[in-house]
Image 1: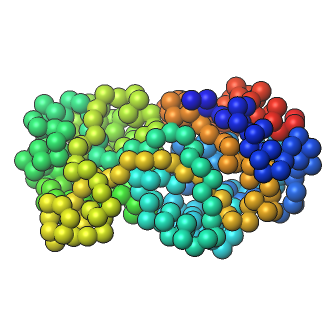
Image 2: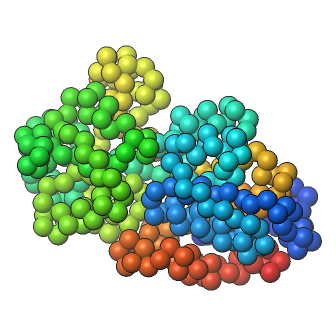
Image 3: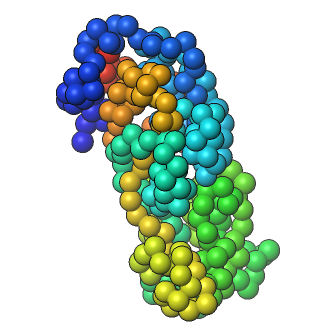
Length: 318
């Protein structure tokens, strides 16, 4: 997949909605700022900054607004956020369904990478917990994943409820001998993972893809019962007839969203953002450049824009 689809498809897209080269030359259509939501993980900061930088190069005013992942679409419904680059099927399906029903937001298409996130362990932990990746092996392996503060239960290193993982509910519903521990920040979580792998210490952690972790370290996702929507909605579904979330997390797309007024107020920006895509493996490398190599997000974005300059500038009339 091309890392950015403008070169191949944006001319057709613009033509279909009534914009040609002259529309690009006339941008911006409004001096009102386009407010881009920024979440608390590196990959999304990169994809949001790519979008914002392209818009700025076209003359648009851009404001970056830090906002919790699961509240961004609610803010979009009131116009407080104009665009978000990532809402994941894996953890935001419920809030996306509500936003779609409101009629005040618009799905602008898939960002490109396939989304996956769940419990993940380094491959050496299979020796300490035979039966993995089957989740049922964890019932007898709590102590193998324990730390002094959780022993004899295992320690699962996750993120706050704002990421929408429902892991505390999953532990309860499946009767797992684990304690969920909030890592606080993504940086802290993966710094601890890296340290554990270097020492071959026990660790079970929330990992998502696209990300550098699964592309850098050898490991596996736990194979929980396959998720169906009823698992989240109906306690009678699944292994535990009294609890919801007795399954793994869903797989799916990463969606871009725009405020419903984006198309009428900034039609050229709307077309650009609808066509914008990023290649998954390339995004992994960009996240690694920031998290592992210490490069600023802005530098990584500048390199990406330079690499794909011909693709998007030709269609932007620059």
